[in-house]
Amino acid sequence: VTQPPDPIPRTVEWADGAVRLIDQRLLPGELCFVDCRTVDELCQAISSLAIRGAPALGAAGGYGVALACSGAVAGGASAPAVAQAAAGAAARLIATRPTAVNLAWGARRVLAVAEIAARGGLDLSAGGDASGDAEAVARAALDEAEELAAQDVADNRALGHHGAALVPEGAQVLTHCNAGALACVGYGTALGVIRAAAEAGKRPRVWVDETRPVLQGARLTAWELDRLGIDATLVADVMAGSLMASGDVDVVVVGADRVAANGDVANKIGTYSLAVLAAHHGVPFYVAAPTSTIDLATPDGAAIPVEERSPDEVRRVGGARLAPDGVAALNRAFDVTPAALVTAIVTELGVAHPPYDKSLRRLVEAAPHRRPLRTP
Ligand code: MRU
Image (cartoon, rainbow, N blue to C red; front, side, top):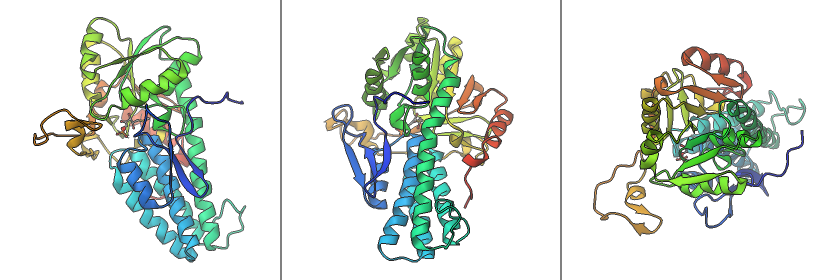
């Protein structure tokens, strides 16, 4: 099926031998692209949130490993040395942000293909002509990264379609952070659900949490919904309870950075508070995430590493100081919502309901090609 042109450009792609990203630090002011020509540049882009959001990080991880391979080939490396460079790059990329499991998933998937190609075992891109030469390794890695990125958009459309069925006609939907096209390669997860509901003519109205401290909701989600022509109202995070109490929230839909095997969900800080409020007010709380975000190797939320970022993100906004520079500030980037507070988890393969230990395993096992080929 041919899709109409997307009003939001692709977040990350391979262009002119580099990883090209929308620089999300500059939105909503400017829509600019940045080319990362080395793995170090890409690591810096990830750490500084030029690219962010779990599925986008998965694609960036994959492209980053492909970038390391092409750089090694340009430097005259042998096939085993290219695979070694890929392994080093994967480790550096994975270390940049610990919570979103997609980053490790994407990097490891492409690394696994590079390692197989380096052994001369399976060069998918060359149609089986597997010589184990350096260029074949780089080509196989890039093909896998491209495949992973393309799959992301297709998966999000499928996820959106499943999730839209959960959104009532004319619903008031509250979302947190940015789980839109900008957080993925395209289309979005939580915003994908909202988008698919809008495309189905359900006319959702969206409450956009501003999402302190980095303001992904105000800067990115509001920008996306405006471009998509979906009714959106920006609110301070602290307003969620009041909105639910006045009966103005029909559903909450958020994304995820990692879903543990038992259904506990790590997502942007503030998500847990929303889930508690939603449970109190009897509002359904949906998590939208592709199966690549489900980590069966992490048994529960307590085992999910939660990134802590610079306290300056709390003390300042942009260049402006909000608090005395010397004041102590704590900046946990994510929190964990217990599975008991999650009404359902929407994936590209369907909707998982409690008990999640069973339903999530079933879904992931139905998607073997999306699991890492190798776990270090
Ligand atoms: O720190 P960020 O901006 O990378 O955090 C992003 C989120 O928490 C998103 O909700 C999550 O990655 C899901 S994106 C589809």
